[in-house]
Image 1: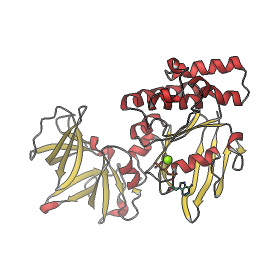
Image 2: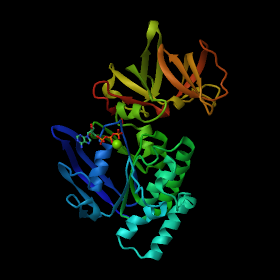
Image 3: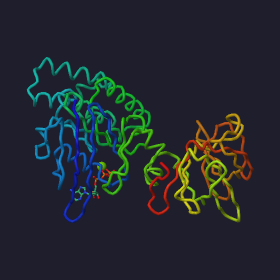
Image 4: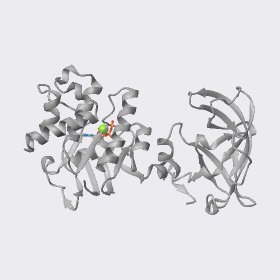
Length: 372
Ligand SMILES: Nc1ncnc2c1ncn2[C@@H]1O[C@H](COP(=O)(O)OP(=O)(O)OP(=O)(O)O)[C@@H](O)[C@H]1O
Ligand SMILES: [Mg+2]
């Protein structure tokens, strides 16, 4: 177990700069998840941490040792690659054991480690097989097992569950979470799966174009996104973002939605929720998650943080566990996540309330979140 400090890490491939001043301090036992669109530099950062790529600038410390110029074999880091490779001529058992043998771990201890990771990953019955006799998901579990057999200072996982079917992926996600809870290992993990990021991470780093957009707990990333990119990237459905005109109201702010065909709606926001004093008379983007839009009969009386609104139903998408409904409020489209048994018709006018405790606002020009 270890702490990891990345300080102003930069990387260019020729003239193309793919990482810009990446600074991350990881505490011992942290589970950091890197997310971001394809090509944003996640694997490049992982390769730099592993020692497979040299940074163009900046430094890395593992447990207060400067590892910037150390070779991968000297870093005591274990990595599962995006495209993992097993030794084709070795059995599963030998594949898992190999890194231990390389490090001259005594035979009895090796056998014990192999047994314990095989049990953990439910691959005990596959130990005598060769990789070609395994399914993709089984191979991926062996690759994870090989990484886990060692007890390095740091584990790096680059999309380790990408080849698994949905059910196995879910099971493995739970296994990884248990594993982290038990080992208290320090882990950097890349995924495209939002739920995986939210459920596994102690902190999430959201990247775009080689720049960290926000580094925070899953709660902060989801509820207090630093900018509109983070707001729309994390969460499914995307956070509703709508342009509103700001005026002073009785106890705070009046946000006016000015939609299609002369429709308007006014949302009264208490001053304590967001400070928009610097934006009175201007337009801002308001952000509201789909689950913050509720049918008014769902949950009790309207209070100061529950603004009543009238909406017209446009599209109904049942997902099973809940129903996504596209509706117009003041002529502006919003997506709401409603109860699965909500009885709605296309074109129907419904009474809603907006849970303003979840409201955030963004600057129209800089895209940054405003009002604290
Ligand atoms: N060896 C290389 N030479 C030149 N460019 C590279 C090299 N490796 C990566 N790149 C470029 O660097 C950028 C970041 O790539 P990287 O593989 O880190 O992205 P990623 O975030 O892991 O994407 P994905 O989600 O698709 O795996 C991309 O534009 C890629 O084309
Ligand atoms: Mg990648």
